[in-house]
Length: 189
Image 1: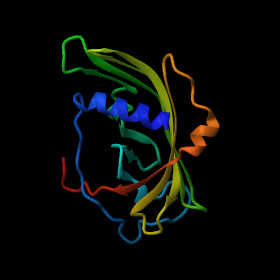
Image 2 (image 1 turned 30 degrees about the vertical axis):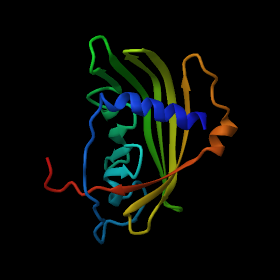
Image 3 (image 1 turned 90 degrees about the horizontal axis):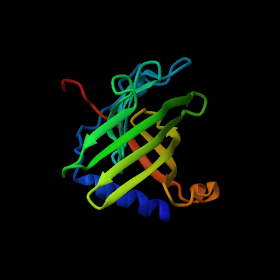
């Protein structure tokens, strides 16, 4: 419960600083579905979660070059090198995020996709104080046979500087279900 409260508070604090993006649901065409070894071509593209603002852009080799983190928002792992700095709405306020790891692993036999995103540290200087911490997010679940949805169990190990680290057993007890859908970005720039 503490994890949910921490996430909710951080989300509220950042709401004034951040903007979002929209998209529409896409579909996989015949012939793109799960064939051969490696990363399925039907997974290539942008997948957006139904809650919390998460999104991943999977490249043809299965790497994640761009993502939308629930705190750091839009991140280009190549251009930004995982470092995001945002000015706050008031003078002297800002947010700094450093993403250490962002990777995907796909198991073709079970159609299971695992994504790891490690936010090594963040610092948010707010009008009323400073928040510092980090998180390790794990998204694991099976991709539908038609390659339109990815049903995920999201586990997060997050911490705030000065507070107790989450017990791993508690992290397992607070799994959050998410559903990712593929966005149709054809014709959009």
